[in-house]
View 1 (cartoon, rainbow, N blue to C red):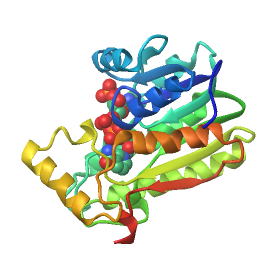
View 2: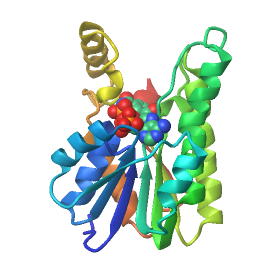
View 3: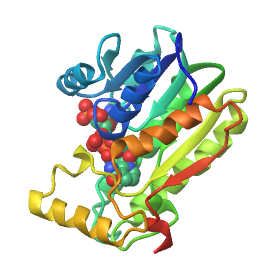
View 4: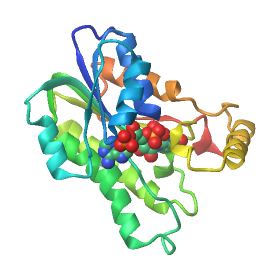
Length: 237
Ligand SMILES: NC(=O)c1ccc[n+]([C@@H]2O[C@H](COP(=O)([O-])OP(=O)(O)OC[C@H]3O[C@@H](n4cnc5c(N)ncnc54)[C@H](OP(=O)(O)O)[C@@H]3O)[C@@H](O)[C@H]2O)c1
């Protein structure tokens, strides 16, 4: 894997889970990392985990004004990664429309806003994180699959529009992150155990499994318009 000395990497959603792991991986190969998310407290805790040299700034991807203000300094990044999202998932006929719109606004339009506003140098990259539900639907999560599929299609269009900036998507399966902190501890553990027992990979995903692929897209100058599925084999069963 290439080194990223003298390169600026922005991870939107870098205060937790997959984004934090991507930020740590980029910092580990020498990048100057900036993380962004809504909570100052979460950013500060994440910065302590990433280590010296990283910066953190507050940003809410659901707000046009917040995104505009964030990029108003004109900073040019070498690589931008977007993992930020907060979605509600339920069956279409059970999920209130307002929640469906809010989920789309967070994950799809949030990434869209970043793609529109971020300045990225030629040959640099933009990486989205979607999810295996786009290709392996599940009852009760149709909206999440639709958001992920939309984002993957957006990335391919952006790969043409933003060239020579490269645009790729990493699509994970189940990964143990704070995303699941809302679940009761025993139900969460049961979900992880079930996944480890049934997935071809024989284990639950860890954030670093996804970060490795994000870093591969950042550092591979021939990768653009690609989606990498890192799901432990969950799309096969
Ligand atoms: N974990 C999995 O099993 C899994 C599987 C497939 C796909 N994914 C996808 O991977 C992405 C990351 O998931 P994760 O597991 O890393 O979740 P996570 O641990 O909950 O992290 C989400 C991050 O996004 C930030 N964020 C949320 N809404 C934001 C907003 N409006 N503006 C700016 N930042 C925002 C959060 O920080 P603040 O609260 O401070 O804003 C946090 O840093 C999501 O799109 C998720 O759907 C995850």
